[in-house]
Image (cartoon, rainbow, N blue to C red; front, side, top):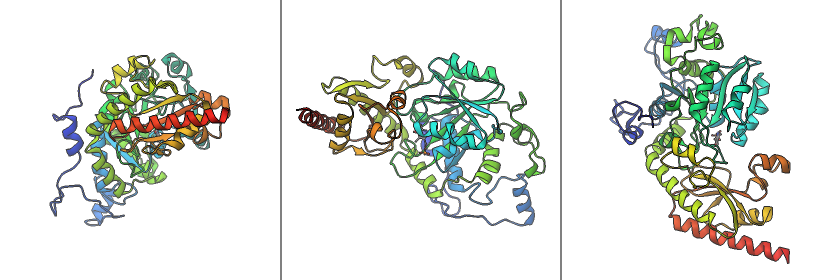
Length: 439
Ligand SMILES: *Cc1c(COP(=O)(O)O)cnc(C)c1O
């Protein structure tokens, strides 16, 4: 096990204090919501030096905002990274993460197990930028090595994949990325820095949908890109946006000027400036407050989920349960290595009776909410075949782990016995209705 990132303080202390001080003018103890678009310059020289990136400071909230900046410092600290860029959503974080690295015609090698929305973004929308996603089965890291060409600029996976619960061998993938001279980017949304910190295992960049467990209450869409600061962008000629002169800033070279903050500075000064997916200060505030209870919530999420998964795997109306916390799961070994505190809160199970039974289960729950999100204090349930994966063919659905019988749950923080009782009555109702339909 790698050590906790430094700073002298423990994880729980940092999730409450990192990035935040009492506000100097009023003494406000919680970080205020700086609901402002822009900031008054001291004088014309100050304005000029801000625009030349010679002075750190606030210009316009598309680039930086004090509430968002406090959140960025907190997320970077918890992750053990050098800097972070927060943005409007997890999907914009993925674009921002690749933007400093990719030129038209370049490739990113990505896992076939990515979240469905990411598969679409990488496979279809990135093509419009001239970015090519090469998908590979990351279960055998050798597949990743084989997929790398000279045009490859990054390797992208999820630490704990949504929804399948597949776990990536981050250390092995980091070694392959290092040999190829490209960064390993890990989407750590389902694990959070409480369960897994990919940078400690050699990842170079971590991305988040903060919409899920970081904000935690299902209130705010948001994303983050965290840079380890450890990748040398001048070690080869693959990353000219960071190593070569930037015409929009009078020929400034990001690596030369900002050192290990080059990537994070580029994400603000060019990425947010020109792509524009800014995080609203209100959402930054809500996410900061969510993070203050992250350790407590994640541990309870994991404990509740372990109980529900174990109970479901004994249920007569359930065919199978896929959760890395179960002893017979193929990813159990990787879970013990990378997520020893727990296997997260999202998993899938197969209901006996196929499509109809799956549909009936989500219609019959009372406490669980039938919706398309994860990582809420509330327990959530979804039947992918009739919703998120509805447009796909049967074959595609099977390949995506979204077959007819599959139900996805995100276990919340309610009393676990109440969750079990709710699923039990829904499974019985579904079985009864399917039996009657067959008669
Ligand atoms: C939800 C999710 C995303 C997309 O994030 P948004 O905040 O919805 O844009 C990306 N990756 C994973 C693993 C997710 O669960």
